[in-house]
View 1 (cartoon, rainbow, N blue to C red):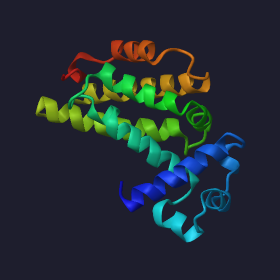
View 2: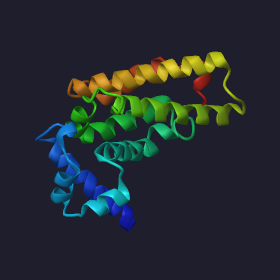
View 3: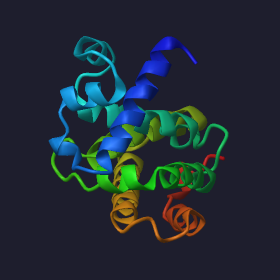
Length: 178
């Protein structure tokens, strides 16, 4: 692990602990810096704000899961791995998905996941998506993001295997490249 990755993980782990006791919106950068023993300037070398810490960890999970769909994982396998990763940090993600404004994990996850799926599917198909395919993919990714958010908000009680199987049933045939 590089020094940068180590510092980012240290910041994330401190945020994860703080989120257990207060809403993410109320955590200040100074609180987070104090909790992990770093300066504000060190924090800002690595992140723009508190929400960017959440996004960084989400991106890390996606690099190992959703971003690999239609590369070397099926839709069900990728979603299962993602849901299991969220479940490993249940308290953090239950509270992170509760945020409902424009900087929510739902909105961020939907946007970034859609971009990756479009890229991966087009690479596998060897062509651009048609307007109808893009429309269908947009709606399914938004729906899956909403389902993930609801699952997290409800405490992640449904087994990840059940959720991943459910997600997989909604994928349009053109998007099943694996």
